[in-house]
Length: 237
Image 1 (cartoon, rainbow, N blue to C red):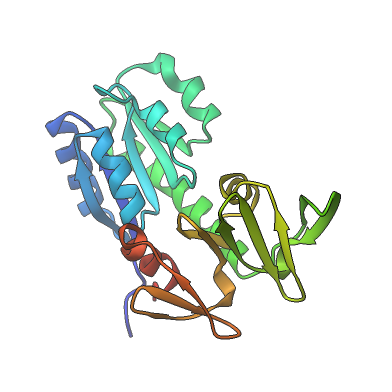
Image 2 (cartoon, one colour):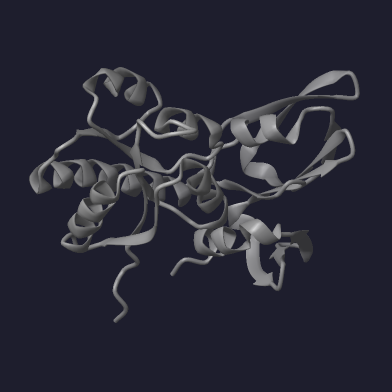
């Protein structure tokens, strides 16, 4: 019987000692695995675009880009635990929906408390993916407002200055931006796989090279930089 996959962690801190301590704590905790460690916040953004990450351990005070601003730049945020030596940033961290806030130096017991909160949130998100999404997407098309049931959306394609929304029964063309639609749709059920495509996860049948094959034999291109992350999210056993 295969062991369940571990929670994939990205560690971001400009201090070597802080990264080493987190790695040790993670190594001593069953069910966690390190995707990468990173001392550069800019590099961390690149990794988040390329690798499937479940849990982000993020320092706040870093050169070039603070942890808070880094998290603000990410459209689809992993579950995040902030780590910092400065307690005054706590309110700002929780405003960004961080699951916990570890004040350096923190103990292994305090680390485990934060991880337990992250596990609970990840389990809730995982359970949500098995349910049909609810609600509607409101878009303007043909000079009228249309309510599209989110559960009926198969995929969305950016096309010049327009966006095409493909549902079970129709194709709706709107001037709404793909970025706005990505933010409006639940991340539990939809995934941006290319600058021009958002797909409904439950419509994916298989991956063929650099394309996803959706129900109805629809083929959608996956961006090269996102291929590994898409594979990890859609085909994780």
